[in-house]
Image 1 (tube, rainbow, N blue to C red):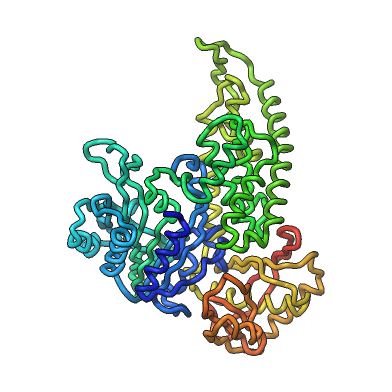
Image 2 (cartoon, one colour):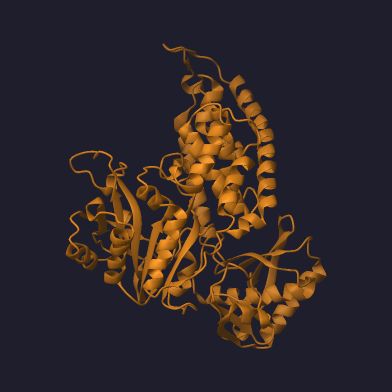
Length: 591
């Protein structure tokens, strides 16, 4: 079965179960600073999982493009992917565990013809925050499934997507491959490869608060997710994601370009180039911050594999063209931004090749300071305390994208102080985690009074910018937390002081005018006719929510809003700066 066939079969099945098909959302979360990328199909639906009414109803289904960056260093094995597609179906306060599990089982065994004996499932064992999921266990047991495992939060609990938000116990479905058991008690959480997870039914019954408490949700939801690539691989008798669809075609292209074989290096290139194409299609450019930093890291890690494969320089765009051609009908944004995507890949490759030379100079300079202490039995130079600095090695990794194995190759036998390297690495991870927790407070799950006010103020800011600068101004990103809003928009140059003052003045006038904030559901065409601001196209479903602020602003949005602008206080711009070519950023607060 091809991925395109699985995608269609899944959506058709849930259409028959009265689910409405909704579009795939952007990879860049809208108005959600809790994460850099959309990590799952449920992510854009957080407000509706918390109780807001969805225009398409209570039963939804779709395929969602996702990016997960936590396992970038693991990419290279048979299963890990940075970019992937997730098939999903949701109940927003409608059906429960029994229906979700029954339909999952029906789709796997009747639609996909997987023998029941090839399936194993896991359920939540319970802990201090939530009880054992007895109901899910009984549903599976009554179906006659013989292999049911009970695990804790680490294995059978999903969410929240950010620091706070909806979450709950899940039940996971595994395909039992033909790989030999790793032991007499081999089971899914051994992660030995015998069990391939293909579907996850999450029962969102709780909301995790900023204090770490798990409060029962008034609206109980079901959120299910099936990995398209992995399931397609399993159905085709493969134990490797890279042997199906566009991934296989791209892998063949890499092999064609290579003079040597290295399956891990080949997979890294394929995965990272695909992810880079989709991130670039969102208008993100390589940089040293946020999504741009992840993008740069992916591209540079792919480039570093060329040495192992002895590929000629400037090869990424050739691999990228495989994905652009294969996904152009499904994701038209790739074709629309084709020139931009290829241009950025070529530019970043050239830039990194120049950067590599700087890194090598730093490496040679450090080597000169290392005194030789002796030679080991195998000719290895022994450095003792004077071995190559782990701190410098980490700096090469962090600044120039040199992985540790590449550094060791370049040193040709000189030992690296790996303990020091790991200490620096852990220190960096901790600083990144702390920074992320501080930076990515709030999110779609944050309906606090402060965030709600700033979200509404963002609408006023957007319209004010269009009035002062011109109607070409368009939103390019938004990041809102309880302390301030951050708004990215298209504009070619720095705002003048009079322009900033004028924007502030217009926003504060609307606050003083005590304008009512109203919601109306309508079709996309109707929203267009009424002059609502929105990124029209594949982004929205048949019906959308349109928020009007008096007669001043009308915008498509799914976030929280105040009832009247009089609740906002005084609007003040804190900072205005460049983000990238043609994109400016405003940070503002309410006093």
